[in-house]
Length: 222
Image (cartoon, rainbow, N blue to C red; front, side, top):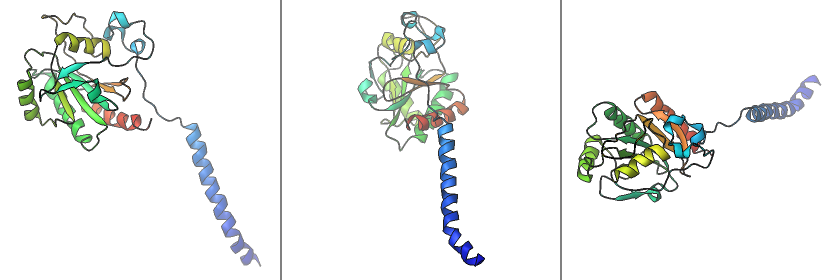
């Protein structure tokens, strides 16, 4: 009699166990908030990185429209990055200090997302007069840049410097984009599909490259 009762109880016990496991999972999920990346506006950033004209802006900051030329003499605008996640940085081809490291790390990001059409890279030359299209092309070939994935851009210096200071908040120093103005920054900046800043990273630190990869995975779940 006891054996038959035990056999009859097995399905009930299994159902109870299943519901217990599901209950614990749901409870844990409700108590564990989904990780989300911050959305950066001027007030969220070191004031030294933000142009004074933007200090009052508390929300809804996005990257300004732009028009630049890449290593293939192709016009690159905000439309090139429409509905894309991208990583932006600022470099120059003759740089012998931080830029080679940054380029190596951008190359690692290129490899990490080579099969992902949602993720692109954008590198702005801070010496656009010297970094002509042909110079950028030679540099791209040398560094293994894949044209569809990674655009190295040159163009109007004032526009590039305004982007660095007023859109990406990538540099500490002030300037007017004139002949004597020069910026040099290790910042990688993560931009979402709505042109909003979602992260800042040290482009010379490989651990930060891993963090970018992890953060993009989080960003894609939003």
